[in-house]
Image (cartoon, rainbow, N blue to C red; front, side, top):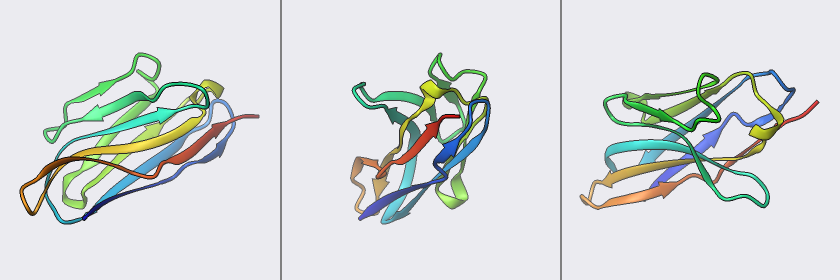
Length: 120
């Protein structure tokens, strides 16, 4: 059993910042890539940022230069620092991880999501 738990969402004014966290726990042997996705009402889920075990990152064009993904492998935690937030960043942000369990099974895991609302 593996769980991903996000935190840090909320309401922020345009131009503001938020930091999301996602902690993985449970029967974890190793964690490969971890990602942040987002889904706005009426829109498809989109990949926001990803980070490999070695720290290689990738960003959606819409967030490049504003968002930064990082991870603490010792804590099995991934972060998303979001700066210069815009109303169009409003969405539910979901954490995703490709995780090998202690039973040596490789699976995709998702968090429950955290709401980010950018509004004045």
